[in-house]
Image (cartoon, rainbow, N blue to C red):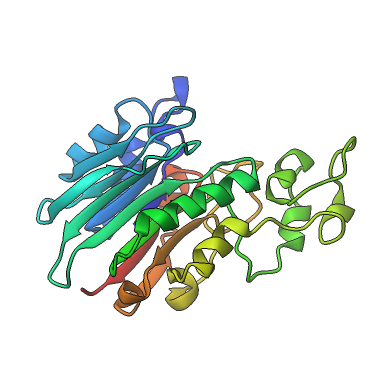
Length: 265
């Protein structure tokens, strides 16, 4: 599972969404969870509540990420992808009957496509020659296989520009920018695809692909797929299913829906 839990599950004076987040994760019974947007003690709290082990990657500028692993799995190696990510990337190697499984939880740059492209390339390097590997997380990037014109027109200009390659200097982006003087920036996802990694939801996904926003809303979203699982070909051959959890609990837990895949290795 990959899950952006929105500001660590904290809503300031309004309290936390941690119980709802734990309910969503627990209902899927995942063996491995990639979490993004940790804050404070939200990661350790969720790990203890779910009875899982946590490997966290701290962030210098943004928010930490983590991988939670079920207690029945043996962790061979763990650590941080040592690159200057805006947020972070955590890397864990787990023993399975099919061989070592590398899991990387990442959260790419929220604002600039060129930074996301560099971060995606660092993820490819982190996968290396691993036969069984999974890169998952909030990639903050639209995919290159879908027409995004209408969803981008629905965004306020300040958020729309995050997903455009460039815009003329001296003016704000307008509707005519889309598909004309500015192109949709899908380079980060395209880089993972070009490296031979398989978009798991695109391969076997069930139902609508959009992962944000939930009922909690968010002006920066307009029905978008930003959360992904990418597998090496050796792992993708064993994927049974992939779906987005859209339940009442998920609607109140975060502004992103979690994505979960079943892999038989």
